[in-house]
Length: 298
Length: 314
Image (cartoon, rainbow over all chains, first blue to last red; front, side, top):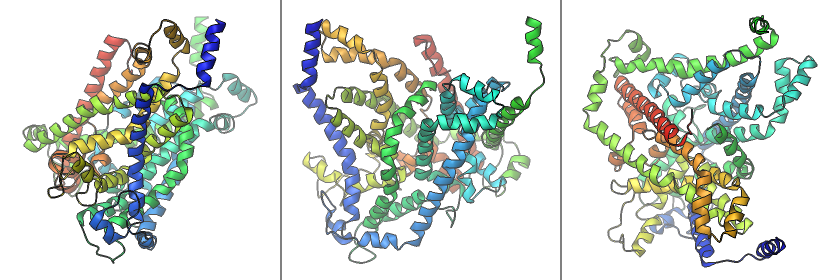
């Protein structure tokens, strides 16, 4: 037994690499390199001279270093309008969906709720069956949400999946806490706000990040349910159009010697990625737990 | 005793009952309005609603056409082409992209340096958080015939040439481009759940196996894989239920006029029929067909899994 322990200690101290290890390390490195390079390509493209890029592309470093692409994007009011809408949409969407979904999750785990199973199955069914996009379009038209900023907020104020994730966390909170609050005469909404919400910060942070990433990255709603106007255009939809236009232009520059439609779109992409990059370390911290909680229910 | 309990159950509702009832019912009202009302809207698929300027009017007053739309698309060559695209891409993704994260998790589990492990995973997971609009843009940029990086690489292997560069976003290669780009985007994120499952395997199993002189491949095959099998089953089920479902944004972001013939899947086809061609009734019928088949697939795969492994979603 002691010999075995000693042996384990030795292997722990010095990591021995076999040829199989090297193969695995190299495969993983190559994979990470590919994912990294995809980003790197856009970054160096965004700092490249438009005309030089059009003739030779880029490989490792910018082709004719310039900030001109960023100057064009920063002066583009339409870009900033879309950016503002995406920020508003993400901020409003996260707050409303998180609060409402957590509130319903609380009711769904509360012992005073009657007919819980009926609610549960009515909710669950919508995860596996939907009416499709035309009926949804019609509904949004009838409700007057079409081409309104609120089309991004109101139809997604509640998520069944996130409700299940949050309520599975609530179920883990000891009943004694609830009973103590109940004895003190606290109402249900007070118990939720004062006892449950502070205790579930970690799961709420995870869910908030999921919602935020969804709102920030989505452009389907803009395409289907709006005319992409002053208050309904979103950053991703704007980028999508910019990229479409740029890929139609094969060579040369229509603006000036310094920039081209392609390199401008790369600058726009990099600016749009900055918020995601800023939040990524926080997402990173939370996502393993989040996926775990989600998977428990499946 | 029983009568007391029964009496309790019929007790009048107190404030707590009312509060949670109102809250849960608010959620229910939301679900009814935004999920069940559109399900009533699928009746458009049985109405003569194509090209209608007033969809609500069409839904309420237009003539019934029965299953005409369904008969029509089942005889439509375009529909079967779209169906082929959807099924081929999704089946390949189910075979390759579904199992790749498992392989990735097994490989990363073998890494002995914690910093290296973390670093690889952080880099490999990042693309999952990039929007399809941007990711599609990057794929288009990399595969461009004159400025992209893919063609020089293919030239090295003699698969393309400078005089006659391969157009990767064209009809012949778009499936491969979609599948490979999707793989790169999702492998890191998809592996998290399996990494967590692997981390929860009892260490004693490995130690006992080591005493028996088992090597690392045998460990992976006889201990790790069986341990994560339940997790794999659940996710496989979900994916089989999604054989006809695609991310609209994923395909829309890589479609162009040249590759449309191969890159059109049900999700984008229904969009095009509805909002470009304004064939609302016809598109709704196809959407309904899609939803029903998906539901049946899920129920069947769940049933089979329950019979075979005793595990299922519901």
